[in-house]
Image 1 (cartoon, rainbow, N blue to C red):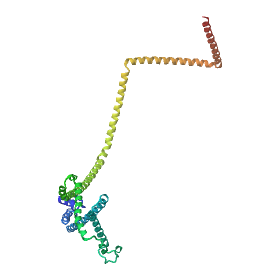
Image 2 (image 1 turned 180 degrees about the horizontal axis):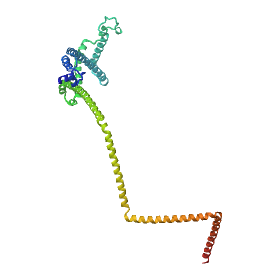
Image 3 (image 1 turned 90 degrees about the vertical axis):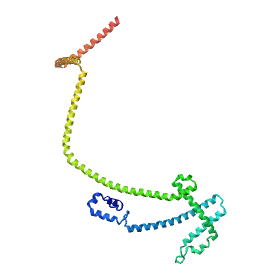
Image 4 (image 1 turned 30 degrees about the vertical axis):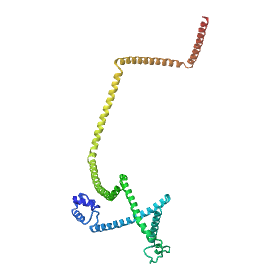
Length: 351
């Protein structure tokens, strides 16, 4: 089972099968084991994987060849660009001018010759009516070319050495302070270091890929477990909680009722405590006497009020004559008050 799970995780990635699936289908498991003997880790057949490896090998060889020519051409172009930059800033020697002019002329004629095509026997007319013989006349002399090629090799080596040192310092900044001999020794091993780092990155990617596959499997397993847990919780809710909910509500209601009664009794007790602390026996006796006197005064006032009402009723029987008597009495009382005031003033003036 462990071997089959490793096969599924490495060689047969689309077969995301669990242990239960493999146990329930033993013949399918045997088919996967027999199939794993005819495929590699990428899932290809062994013959096809061998052809693919050979094809990749040829591609790498062609790529390396193309990179060599491409690097050489770019280095030559950079030499020409540096020549034009230096020509503007400093004065170059005749040998430097001759070298760069010969190199540029040779490079341009070669590129134009390649543009004309491999042969002139095709029906398509040549570009601008030129033939290779016309361009070969523009080639520099053989002596200049031999001299230029000898110096070009040194210039290219120097340029490549600078680039290698730049790459080394970029990869290992501490190498910038080393001498050229030590830098050259480090550059000689730089390719192996880069290959090792690349392999480490590839191993880390493969490990990450395996971890991702394992994570997906664990996520799927955890999802199934969570679904089962949710199903069990729903079942518990349906079968247990809903049955006991009414009884639980009744108990809670009874508890709240008892708690409310206890709170009311407690409030009454606090009220009585406050009253007993506020009103002592002596204060209560004094308040009782005051209340009795007030009640007696109220009773006396009610009796006087009743007598006054009876007298008023007797006077109201007289009608208009009573009103005239009242007015006359009022005038006489006012006149008496005026005379009494005048007498008081007279007495004050006499004394």
